[in-house]
Image (tube, rainbow, N blue to C red; front, side, top):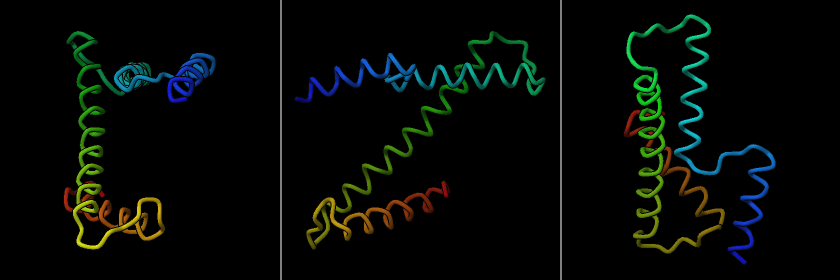
Length: 110
């Protein structure tokens, strides 16, 4: 069942031009941003284009990794709470959102 879902998802991604791999997405987006900046005379550089693209790529990766880390921290906090909160319940969703916002604020990302 799971394999069938992945096969359908992969086929639809190809049909609609969606990039499934996150690194490929970040790479594509980095190229798009670099092209826009250069074409609109917002950036000039004297280094290899790939170096600039890699800086943009690493920024996206770090940003995404930070949010993934926060997500893991919040799930861990909920998991280790004294009272049990049922995943998918309204209490769970509200608690998750509150803890997530607190963690974003703590890191200055809000």
